[in-house]
Image (cartoon, rainbow over all chains, first blue to last red; front, side, top):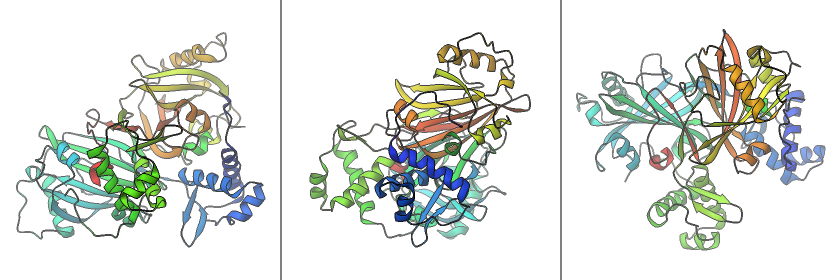
Length: 253
Length: 253
């Protein structure tokens, strides 16, 4: 019914099954419900288990299903809209921000970060690790790289690491006059440390948002934030977040 | 060297291998070069082929490798920055736009699109299919849903479909005074028709950008655009695109 049929392209078997399963999820299952096991599902739909597994993988990629060890496959709730666009935050750690600084280190960043910050190859920078929580769920883990030149008055007397140090770095950064920021989103895989914080397995698909904070005519800080791709829809725009309950794949399929 | 070591989390074997392979890609291989076969690679790094395959999958997810049938595994070029943010285009199909309208249909959209457009459940809308080309490569395929109310003066005399019809719909849409737009990015899987246009296999991971175009106090059009996740980095911001050569995962690992 809802297809536009602009072109007819032969669809693989698992793709057709995915559509059928998707409709079954809508009509027969509720969010959080555990699906029957693979053998029963394959029998019900008259397909090989390999075909079923491919379809389940697609539905997981699209955020319709969640597969958790020891729980099984459950029907996922709709993805949460999480704002990441311009105007979202002038500086990281501003009041009202839903990020919690957790730790801070002083270390040489990866080479590409150093290049973006225009710091020397062996120059250590402050690295603030934060977690973003939306509706009680950890949705993103961030590493924020802040060169010493951006926080010249940061006292060395404070604790060298920990949340107090992280907050001190953010406080100093916020003294700069913001000149806007740029972001980029791309697909990535969760590093082991991020995966742990986000309650995912290492290597799970994530959306990586890189943000360059500008001040004084240069990049004053660089953030690399890893968002859960299964539960998040990243929103950005000039008039608030897009309020669409369903994911676009659900709409478009 | 470049790690921040904020926390020590045990890493699975394939993850360590991924890091080692990633360094080997940087130092020993050039973009486009074909990797040795899995057996040789597994032998060289002293790992099981299953471990190797997991590491290769991660590197593919991060855009470092491309696996193509009949070609093998090659070293991927850096991802392209593709602007999608606010200010990108007031209306689809404006001059200078890198989208090519390919076709147009008049059909009932999926239920969630109808809800967003506030059209009736069984109300047909104009559906313009376009392809976005950046540096000679198809990077995205879009379905743009335009309710009849947004293009009231569209002549019914034109061809009912095809690129000419698509351009006529876009031209009429552009007569409206734009009031901004909102976008959301999420992970999805390529539908068969999109996959074909993007030269990917159906089900390949894609970044789905949903954009709501506002005019006259309502949603005048809704776009669902599917971007290649392997080759694209979506940029948005208030001061141009983020010019970072390397992907963030490359930096962060």
